[in-house]
Image (cartoon, rainbow, N blue to C red; front, side, top):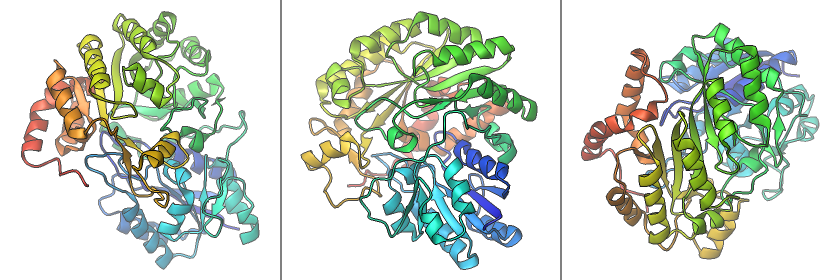
Length: 481
């Protein structure tokens, strides 16, 4: 039975900002608590990841290797990039230098486990969360026992079999101790914020989303006291005083954000908070007041469109009235808001895009911003995949491992960008492709060094000149056909 486990976080993407590997830290902590000796290798800031992996294999001599893959690609229609070729090179080095048992997991793997295993020439992947599955996998004595671990799929299994995501019980969440596994200072130097997750799963049925495949189809919440314990511990161990709630939807299920923020207030935690995904549905003024009192400074809200026809086609579960009502409430609050829109979804045409443009002009005030993504990444098992098959946008035999995108046949990406550029009357829109500019990383580090208030997207307007120069120098490559 393996006793020494090398956990490798393979994510090296730093745009729009580097993301600390919270999920991988959670699994590493579960393995440690189960009695394994664990070494954590975070490749995000390694200049030469191959050399780093070779050194870890030589020095640590692991019996087991846990590979974490956060994303398969950058989800960018205009400049698509797969991260898997780099992971495959790491796997080849591992196989050449070690006979350790290997388990691969992470959000990206959970979506396409069999194609990932085939591409990387690995045998086992975990679908869903890995804390319990990884412990059972590395505790198993032989191949037969390994194959029976809940949530683990084998490369020799049927490619189309549906694996139920591995889950834990609602009360068995461990504290991930992110700061104990990664060099938090490296992430805090880019933006002084650490992630916190209060719950998993999602009960919504958005047309394009994979959360249900990754985390399960129902909400599973952590005890608010444990979440606040994690925040307090991180404040003791790191210099950060700001945290981002990275739940799939911060204001669902009903009542949970109140319990969590009231616990923050009860404990007298002097920290700043932001939330990375808020739904317009059911948002109330009382919730916003509570957020302000608890130290919330900014929110990311994800309506994806301001047009009723597109919202209905995306199966968002709310309509344009809900979006406008939320905008009015947020406009009267002190909270800074980043509005996220997906351009080119089903039923998108010039009229629906015009409604979103009108919304951007009317509701994205001076304290706010908007993040614009062109096209939607197609994943198997989603309603968007079925729609794309019906419209001929993808073929039945396409496993979607390499990025494929949906864009409304009623519009083109070029026309959509022209309508946005011409119609929006302010410079507070950030396009996904813009976040690839290297200059933004430098500006982010400077902002952290001189103590600029977060969130850094609030300075998007000031970065327009630098981004314009990057584009003129050919920073945006031609779209792949």
